[in-house]
Amino acid sequence: MQAIAQPYQISSNNQEVTIKLNRSLIEQDKLEQFLDYLFIKSIQQKSQLSEEMANELINEIDNAIWEKQKGLFE
Image: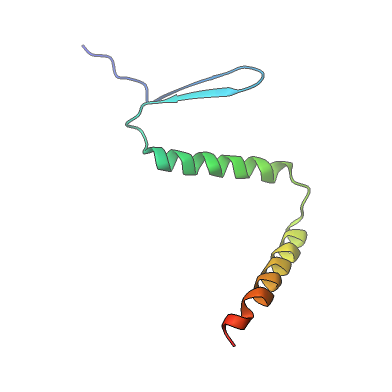
């Protein structure tokens, strides 16, 4: 009887987490997207930025971009 390979293994120490995945589990580009998502979530958790402050920042960026680009539409 043949043993079924585990789809993943996780190990950790004080500094890092190591994840080994069976190559057939996920395509590499999808894995990279998932890791980017985890990275962004970790930044969000550490952020002191409130939702209101984030919305203000978004509006400032939108306005700055519009000011630079509006000549293209006039």
